[in-house]
Image (cartoon, rainbow, N blue to C red; front, side, top):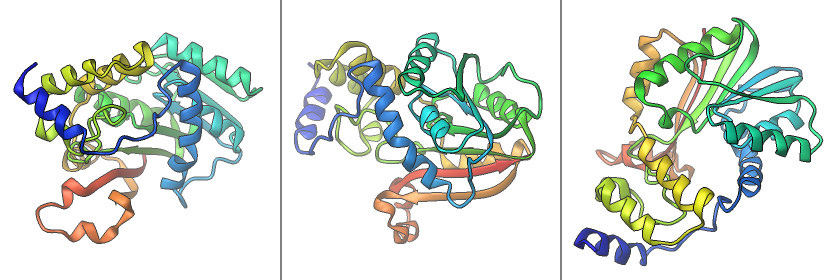
Length: 264
């Protein structure tokens, strides 16, 4: 074991672990996403009202949030994910909850299989940071294409300087671990922690390795370059302490989420 890995493991032992977030099975992950959905909606209040709306959940994962939105007012909602297994598990979860107004499609967010002006809303929950930047550009363009005039795109993501941006928090509890240790060290340490296979260790590592390391400044530059109308943009600080925005130099490291509402 390398020195950096030993240091990481020792430091990790000093930080309290979180309760597992539900990656032990596809069903448990869908249920975890379902629980998280209420908080995701709350981030966009008062700009979102699902009642009677046609909605696209872009990058729907295992469908938990899609099903929650379907049960909370959508006329209809389509979940899209590039992973065919995710789509299958999402459909199974919707069936288990007797949800009839949700459907799921396997598709690339950079080439959505929908006509222009199809949806009132597009939702991107924790998707922005997972797409390579050229793909992210195309995905945002596609999301704009498929919303109706007056439609909205709702998104949220943790910028790269955020304490939990590495998405390794089930196993490595060190805040800003991605800024303190190399990717190789973090992957090796995670592999040593013996979590469950597909929806434990492997998916966490895959998610970490695909992160595009996007910052707030890069995201806002992309929004400007694509000429979106910004209805709302805000940064949420850790523990929702707004005063942290004014901490010199360190404020960008204290951001929890970037939250935006965009339109044509």
